[in-house]
Length: 434
Image (cartoon, one colour):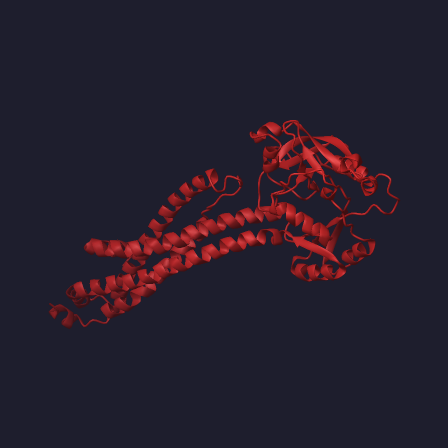
């Protein structure tokens, strides 16, 4: 028998009992739909996180800073960078710098491939002409190799001789009075920059601040790893650093943060060694870890439900084929009397099981893609509206084909027992069966 003939006969035999076959396919569909949709969500989450990690420098990217600075940044991250600034003196940041000996020890750790010490650039607050409120400022430097998605405008120019340019996150743009976020692109915002030496000796914080203006060239698209802080270009960063350190003795102008590319396989060991030195280290995976763990836990639960549904469907396949063997006993006897071998009888029934798996998985793929498309649209407009680059479901062809083949194999295994019983029937006894 040709393959196409086997498939045709298997499909024809399935629909002799339409209701029974439909219910069995429906059980398979439930399991395949759940697993395929979960795999699409998993692909969407992983693509989003992978892109975030790649944008932030990759798996080997590591940020190093004193613990006090680390705690301050963590506080800003937990509030999406939106903390209103007040006049009290204690609102000023007391910067902890990385010491020279810490720098040397960190640079010489085994597995550290490159080490870049950032110049310090600390601002007190930012404000705009549309609001009287002022918001704590966390500045990040736009450095080569680090990219980020923009929802409006463009990323700041990295040329040291460019005008003062800055990219801010969408929440800060709204806080500064721009409900229509796109309107802030091209506008100037005011940045209050403290002078370290003057702020140590003055009572009023505003007496040691210099106000500078920077042009907002874009708004940063929200992301798991980029919710807080503003992105300053090199020209603006250097100007802030210049104001911060004006009047300080030579040699006392140190950084509070460093970045390094390290061997990803040695990253955990390097982080432990940095703690011994006195530095806190944060990798991109640390920032993404909680988010990924949350999604992984949910997907595992749904995959368990899908697996349970497939087990139930397998029992349904066994039952369906046992009943088919029972109903077609005389037909099996006639076929064997006319010369059909045991192996061909076995093949015909296992083919029916495989076709049950095929139709169940096919309907699961089609319906999951429809539901996934609707879910993408709804998610983008509702709970994922803050993450425009996050596509909730991504259907990868090879993954769907692999799942379908696995389901068909499970169906084949479930069909082997009734198929074996059919192949072992004695043709004379089968022809006498009433």
